[in-house]
Length: 400
Image (tube, rainbow, N blue to C red):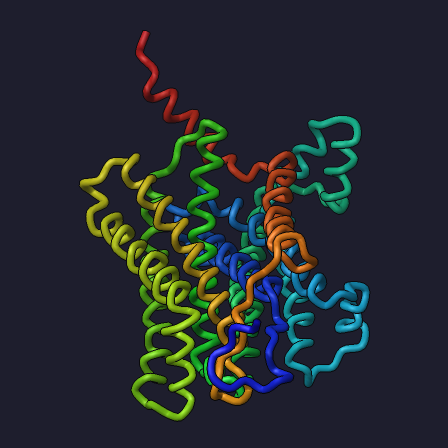
């Protein structure tokens, strides 16, 4: 028996955009957010973020390489995806992702190459066998690592990072544009939707970098840089405040206007989405991290490193849940509104082992971390942290 509410058209019972369309904007949000963290260092010169600058750049690339997988799995004909590039239709909003993705991928690959170019050349000279051949291929035949050449690399890197920021944000913001442009759905048709998607993307990216940085530092036995964590938390708190304010503003605007659409949206938020919206997205995912990050930012001088790391790790984890809940509520919740605007469709529950089920989504989400693990074997993403740890151990060693 279908658990519908109100009047739903007979041909309008099922939700067609599944879990894959939820994790797709979630992954692209991580792409944009991680790149913003890297750009804070390369463009704006925030020196406190140097320990995570290289890592966040590789993390953005790792998530970007997997960003299309949920869409291709949902479409069912992945080989046809290349037609967006081969036979472009510039008037198509859906095709916009292909153009933005390709352009941003080119910018990101070039920036990664410039950032690690010196290390690639050094490894090409020091290593032997297949690793040496691998690094020689990556060097592209350019072996100049003079100070003048490296200075040019830094200038080009800054330029690429600068143009990469709007590219990354547009890559994710266009998803909000697509939802906001669907006028027939009152829950999506909102000019704030692209802006909300962009700010929440930065929140998820910073949160992911905080968690991954702390985990990797623990596994490697490196020192967790307190200034880096404090700076990440300060920016995360700022973007969280802006994001939640925009989300609340969008809902309050609908509620205050009390148009005919609000009745069905109100039923949605107070009914099927009550737990995921009020419980996960707003209370556990937004209010609790807001309090935790507030303690870190406002009381950082009186808090120890362990307390700061624990609170920031907890807040970041909750914010990743918050952003995923927001994506779920928008994608799945918006589809629950029937085209009759007088009822709600059945609640979508993803299967475990189906084509677009939980296992498939989990496997896709794991792939970027496998890419990061492989990248760590070939590129010195934490060279600065290793130097910090060595200096700390030398300074804390007992004297002769």
